[in-house]
Length: 309
Image 1 (cartoon, rainbow, N blue to C red):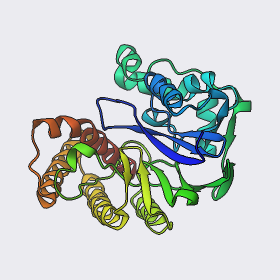
Image 2: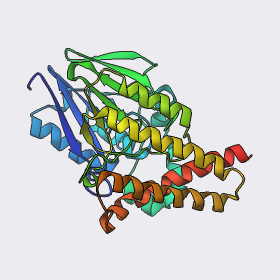
Image 3: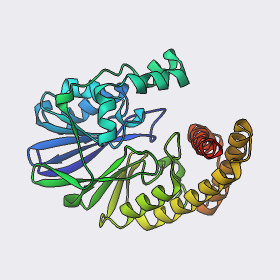
Image 4: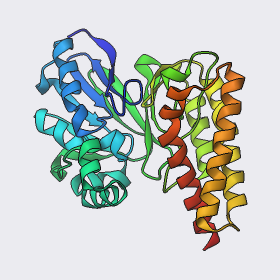
């Protein structure tokens, strides 16, 4: 295998250009960053085949956090990679070893049939094959060093991965969503505030960790590599400020009213942001954004409910 490269894999989660996993190759070793769902695992293994990399050469499977569009495929992927170890945040590792709470929670939201359609079967991973990474801890990959930085705001069990050899950072959901389909004019980025851990102050701080990391490019799970980190950070900070203000405005409201108010405000802001980027949102855009806007509103309403209590 060639000495150093990165392969972006479209996991075709809810359609193309929505969720990526990355195959990072350095020297005679390889790592996956993110797994998406069980249904994406054949795509990840096919990428190994295309790149001429043996399954035995994969040393690490890295998940930035255990939301199922990032880590749902970890158990199935590990089963195909005999020498790989999963790297995860300390708060995430236990859910890989025992995913029952994650599965039960998701099935309660989607129903068993829809859960299986979205995520497939999620099995426990042997604890001996799961390693927790503390803040600023590093591992080696071939001749490169990967450093893990804990980044709260989107999820309390989230980290990003610094890859100085490539002047890159793998950001998970810390640095927002930049869907290729929406990049028809100027940059259009927005954050994920999905339930249940949104924290505006921590989100601002984590965005700055990415922006000032020294990386020249960011590899986003949603979606692909970008280089205009300052532009994206500015947009994300604006969205986080709006999100924090919506939480405060929702505290006095009844739960259903709060979520409806927040959803309406997020839709209005998305329309404004799109117009600022020079695009007019069409039916396909609204379909793409539907789930994120719903989850973002739910996440902010959840935070308001905790403050209300």
